[in-house]
Image (cartoon, rainbow, N blue to C red):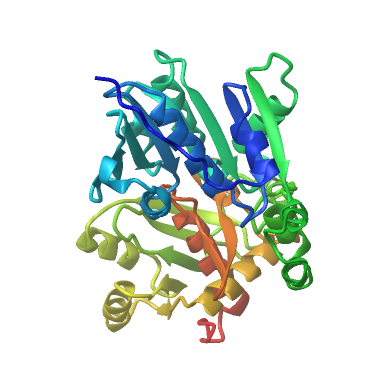
Length: 397
């Protein structure tokens, strides 16, 4: 028996309507922060689901679980006839009155996105995902010929930027590109101009341009600069090490040992996953007279203490938001001045994918979700001790 549904679309600003009412199969939106891109696209996905048949799947995909949960909660809260819907708070699904199902998913493991037939999807903050998430998403839309909308902040000139350029230059009607700046939201009455101008005064220009003007920077959020990284690429040195930086494995990470010679060139490199006894033996086999700087944060603290008792000339570096920022600034200066070498392969890859993010508590340095930064940390620790070798003072307070 057919179900009659009375649906009243929530209030949307003109620039939001323009995007979600686009007839293009794929839309790519580069947007300022806090301009309502999530709110409008939740509306779009809900409307798509109401037009489907029982059992049809609709996906909201975000970089991590917590972001997917935010969108789930937002849609759940805005539904006026909630008694007609079924909510699964554990699986983050909403079953509509027509029997369609809206799933809110994480892109942390792109392989988990394969398999389903999806009739419409939103890729939220797609510029913070790996490209392989889009590959998986595209496969789910093949049989259904479903639509997909990409939304996110500008974030460098990686695959997300290239996708936007494709949409911008498409004349087939299949793709369409949109750009929303903070000033568009000010004109619409959504944001306060004084708040935007304050952000402009207090943030670095490249950060403001990306977050508020949707203008990607050449290096994205890489603190070192990709051209500077590539200028530092050299083969491994055949000289002896004058110091070592060691990043210990945590969960699925790798232990990495980097040795620098007297010229601050990498002369020793080891990256492995092993239990603590094997890791300890590898460190103990390094020359005892050479100083070693090891991450002593959290689980690393007792490990460093044990190595110090064994007399391995070890110093512990404890990470805090301040100390890691200063550590990375030291490596950044060395790279931009060409004063340290970088190896091709995994070290270069991790250096180029490494990123920083401005938060309420300061600058956060990390690898993108699902990727590693162990070689970056080990090189930074090595450079830190190289600059201070012989002084016995290595940790930054």
